[in-house]
Each structure stands twice: as structure tokens, then as C-alpha cells.
Length: 391
Image: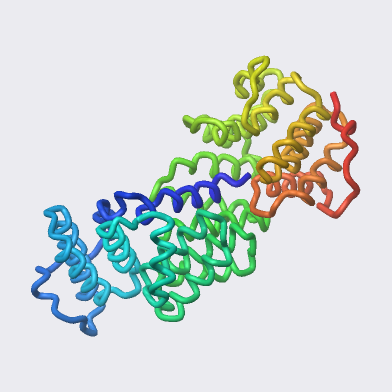
């Protein structure tokens, strides 16, 4: 599982663009530092002065927000269209214009966005909304087609490159994602989205120090709720177990995502204090007679309530129902348990996880890091017998 990637896709699924109140939250996009905004009536046409153009764009954004708040939606749409001319590389103007237009037409829904984008394929704002929608639906080919159409018209638009990079990481196509992230950071060095994505790519390549620096830089610019997990799990990969445990002690979100926070904090504490003293970090197991969402059964396994064969059986059934690679996750946590308790073939289990987990999973990164620490390589291997990690 990848908390960063899940959060990015969830954010797109519930983003400004896809909510009924999308056009009601425009002010946040004008938060970047800019020169004092002139009166909109003084901004008649863009000039060669980029700073002046940017200032006019910010002023027009604020004017659009004021007009929309006052219920003068036609004036708001006009201000957004003018702002787009002053700052064409800032796609938020085109997207806000498309969002407000759809909202006024009662079509700011996935079906409405899809229909509007097909009806007006040359509309940059609609194409970006449709790209967001496609990523939320995990239709990455459609998202890339939309974004590439936008970049053909506006090659220096950071948001388009960010969206492309998100889709490429999610596919995953890390070679393409590296190039996309580099483009974003060339255009916008302080992009928190690009810094987080570069952190993921660096972690995946074994550069955990570089990844940690990127994650911390992104958090300083624009904190996200998932930052403690991303940073803490990276500290774990660097063998900074005390720091990892402290970072992961931050209030976790509800299950199932919050369960991963507890799992990784337990793994860090167990390296410091042993499994018995660390077990409290796992929290309670599954109450008898009730089902639980994955990865809840991993907690039961680490508590010793179920054995490895039972965990794998649950993982297979969960994977059949949800298809999110629970079996590879089970192998990773079984490997960590084998390593901590010094029984079974931890290396073989880590290899199994590294071979089977998607490259954008934390468990893949963890398995590769553990193999490296053990002086082993994540080479292809036969399936690990289920009994190799049994207690």
C-alpha cells in the first residue's frame, strides 16, 4: 500500500473540481506570494512584464471570488477568463472557469464533466477536470491523453505536469514519472506535489536520505495529514528507528489507513525494545466473531492470534475481492516478524514481497531495504512455502 499515492488519488476524487461546492473555494489558489494586486480595471491586456501579469492575475482571481460571492456569476466567469489570459500557465483559472460553468449548469458531477469534456475537447479547463476524474477512477490512459492535450497547448503549465506525474506514479511508470517531476520542479521548484512524488521515486530507488529531505521540504511548504506516515516510514527505511517511532506516534487516521501507521510504528519500536515491549503499539486485535478490513488481520498475526497460513488465506480472499495486492503485503509483514523473532526464512519472504508488490507500495520499498541491509538481492525466487514463517 502507498499512503502518499492513495492520499493523492483520494484528494483528486474529492478535490475542488469534483465537489458540488468546487467553485466556492477559489481563494486558496491565490495564496502564493505575488506583487500587490492592481485594480482589475487597470489590467486590460497582458504585457511583457511577467511580474505585472502575475499581479493582475492574482487581482482578477480575487475579483472573481468577490463577484461569485455576491452572486454575480457572469462577472466572475469573465474575471476568470481574463485572469487566464494574464497567467495561462496557471491552469487554476481555466479549471475554476470550467468548474463554475458546470456548477451553474447543474453538471458539476463525474457524468457532467465527462460529457462536457467530450463535447469541447479543446477546452483546457475541462480537459484538466476530466484528467482529475480519470485518475480518481484509475483510468490512467485517459488521464494522460487529457493532460498531453493540455501540454500541447501550454507546455509550461506546472499543474499539468504534476497531474501527469501523479498518473505515471500510479500506473506505475517510474521512468516517465521521473521526467514529469523534473519538469514540474524546473517550472515550480517549491511544488509540494512534485517534492512528494520525487520523494516516492527516490525512496523506490534506495535514496532514502533524499526522499526524507523531499518529504520534509514538502511538509514545510504545505503540510498534509499523511506526512507523518510518509516521513516515519522513510526514517524506518534509513534504520532511524527511534525517529520513526516518534514520528509515527502522531495521531493516526481511522482504519484501515491508520492501521498501517500502527504497524510501522510497532516495527520501529520492536527493533529498539523487542516484540513484547513493542506489542502495545499494535493496539487491540480483531474482536472475536467480527470481520475487519485489511490490514487488520496483520495485527492479529503479529499478536500471535492467527498463524501465517491463516493470514495468507485472509490476504488471498481480500485480494480476490479488492485486488490491491494484500498477499504481497502479508509476505512483507510475515518477513518482518520472522526477522524480529529470528525464526523462519525472512530473506525468502522479503524476496517474495519485493517480487510481488507493486513498485509504488511501501512494502516493496521496505522489502528491498531489508534485503539490502541483509546483504541479499531482490532476485526472482520460487514461491515461499507458507510454513516458512509459521510460529
